Length: 626
Image 1 (tube, helix red, strand yellow):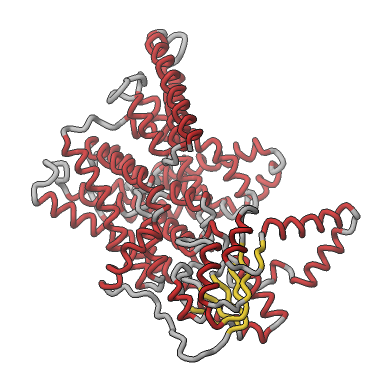
Image 2: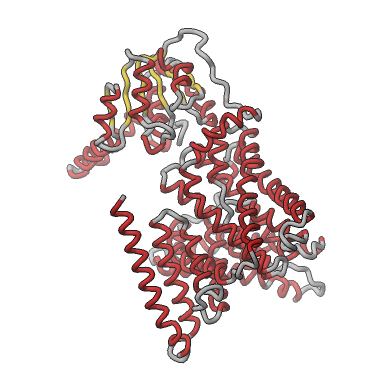
């Protein structure tokens, strides 16, 4: 801890020293524009400050996006005034906006959307419209009450705030789930599915945005027609010509990157030229032109199914990160000085409104569509921040003249606030649920009914928690020892998996592993062999050592097998009462060493065939968790 603090202090000193050194050079650089073009100068300032703050923010586990925005604030007229021409950054930011939507299009998986579970589909379809309506009504009521000093007046203002609080940050949320290795957990799958739907709703809003101030049916229909025409043309080309073109250049990564970006801007330019093309054959203006953002999204989505999509994402991602960084710096540059404490108060209010929407809309929709109380609440808490798509919507709203620059700055402040609290909210989500649980129960949000032990049925095997290892274990038991499956008890809180587990033949109970009473009612005290396969870094409110100690008190005669992540944990788990402790890393290393030996002996093919004959081909295994 002391070393970390000293490192952070050193980083701050280095940053401030570099900042003052750069400050000494800013004026001469700006004065001698003949030697350094203002575009290069301004981009250099933006990149330096955003890089410095990204390092510091990452070190203290804060979202880097907030650092980029603050870098813009520091470099802009609100603070140091180092950027000589904000238009320079704005031009580059427009490129970042196009590439950001191109990347989002590349990562939209329509197959996953079609196969999503009922909670994701129902919540995804209803959450954004209901949140927009919620935000609209609240803001209108506040404006009628005179709150905001005129900043909240106007129908478009209320609508924009509702739209902005309706989405959560894909960049921040997915990063946190990846770092915690929780994308494959129930909250991870729910959050990822909802984020896809939110991005689709945001895309629809961006499509309609140019017509918000004059919602005539003709131009709106024309816009949708333009989208359909552009998408049809892009799909036709992507399915006929592009596969051959990318196959020719697949072995040259640099050309793959160039071709992908070229395709992106070809679609963008084609979308911007639809009215011109239509005018050659038709006199009336049809309003077919497609915005650059929507064109980029279509370009990405149409090549997402190519076998080179992963390579394209990785290559474009490097370039995209640079331009997207400047996009967020540009947002910071555009922030105006708060016109009194009221603006800051409204930013805090918008942030609180976003948090409230998660509890009043996200959580009930997830719960009523079939998610258990705990996973619904944890997912809602972890989606508490405002989306970067919300910033894009505000950015475009300012360009179209729908909202004032003061309101746009207020929205950016609100984004930064929610981004800064995201990490602590993420890591305390289960603890917050534990605090809210009694209140949720009183409001009627009950947990799935726990079936008390009405009989004295004994279990030969009990699996505590259900994740990847338990999924593979249950599959092998069902294949090799079917009678044992019927005498196997599974305790897990992921209700969405229960029907699949029952279909294999095991008995499953809803239960929180950190609650001894739940374990007792589920029947752990009547199991002969008890196995905990879930590692500590996927458990919440308990770890394997404490779980083993709790189970040993409930069932002194059972044989307990537990999981350890670190070598040093084994002794403590044994001391808590385990009969056997396994480490997946050692078992995996042993299997890998055996495969390496076979490879060195030239018999890897026979070894693989033997393993697949014994354990089944991974592609044909039908497990609860694929």
